[in-house]
Length: 384
Image 1 (cartoon, helix red, strand yellow):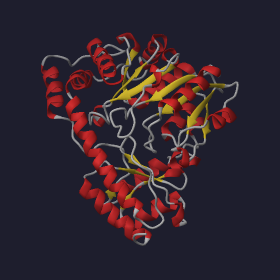
Image 2 (cartoon, one colour):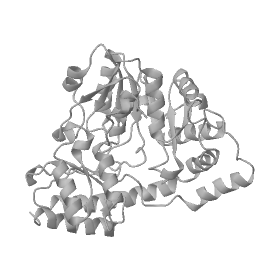
Image 3 (tube, one colour):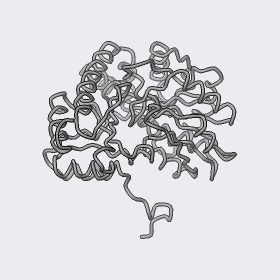
Image 4 (cartoon, one colour):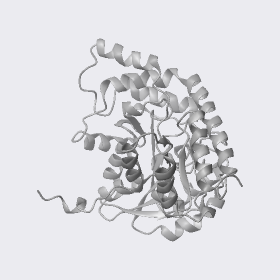
């Protein structure tokens, strides 16, 4: 057997290597994975089961059930004033498929894609897999990891076609302000770019307000809003994602997917239709729980030797600075795992701007988080 040349040197990312190591260990306090510890609500599960008994066990429409697309439109209009039509919604097998299909539809070989650091690693791989060239844009902690116009201008070129935006951010937890987004919008218009706006954490904002990039003047036709129910509705295993964008793009994404997944699971869509219309109060309650966990964990981190942690803004990640410990983020994460059985992700896994930081997912109970902080505090040599 001979593998395709483009995959012969394929290696796991820093994030995947950590996940693989954790799988082989027992008793790990796992703060590495961005999956809520809450189970899917029982009434959502019951809705899927009822749909199965009612005969919804056949192929779905390729772009998604009309009622599911309408539920997506209602949710985004209700929560974020983003108006859209069902034809502009593509129901995908998870949020990562949205980006893959969009990049496949948009990129010619050699086209460049701007990635604002620190960024979700699969996006760089998807750019390469679709014939594009990832172009990281550095950011600084003192600016809250928000991009600066000068840095974007240094990286953009005549070959740049797409910018991938993520707010609330993974791994930084940053929530971009309207002023920051407007500056990006002006840059996008100046260079005639299209934006893939990853807004999967839209329901988890603690400071400021989530502003969909597509709602900014002139950005609706330049933006594919990427979302899903994994984080907001605790439905990671259902693999429900969606893209909201210009109909010509969602139509081509649908045609490409017809050769791959042939639509999103029928029962998952029926559960999604119900979930988007019925769970707002539970979303608010879980946001409060995540916010409390993150505040308590950030307070512990800020009390440790060699560690500092910015204020909580969004998502359920903390991105503490560990530069004063003298260790690289890779060394710190692996030594913490080996000696203290606490799993976090090295910031370097998310681009060069992430070096000197760790991603800590507050997706465990507060008791588990405090036990992990006890172990990490001992690891760095105690309190300040």
